[in-house]
Length: 172
Image (spheres, helix red, strand yellow):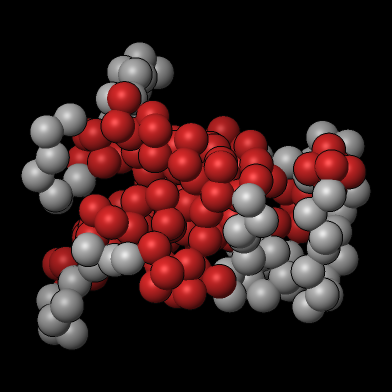
């Protein structure tokens, strides 16, 4: 994938999907759920199943502050788009890994890390501790967390990928 600095604007439909991801997050869904659900229908995955598949990845995988949930959403979506289904398909597996690495590299360039704890500790945000107890979604929560911006970034990176490199045939 070309890391050109001259990015073309997203189509209105893809821009709406990025906004849907942010809206999902603001409605209380986890970062991964928010990103995956915004694109799941493209892969014939219904909203409920998409949110269930992505549920455990929130808070950096089970709120353990490991890989960012929004980044995990990119990985799930890349697998839906490029994942091989034949165990012997080394070329297909390698292509999926290549896409995942490139998308995650772009997220890291834009955000400084792919690790939840590091993202929460960047730019003055308090580095969060691991706990299984979900934080209440209050106005204060949204002020102290960069998560909505990370969800938007991940969704935008995947939307740009779709527009330029997806195996799916779209009229973008």
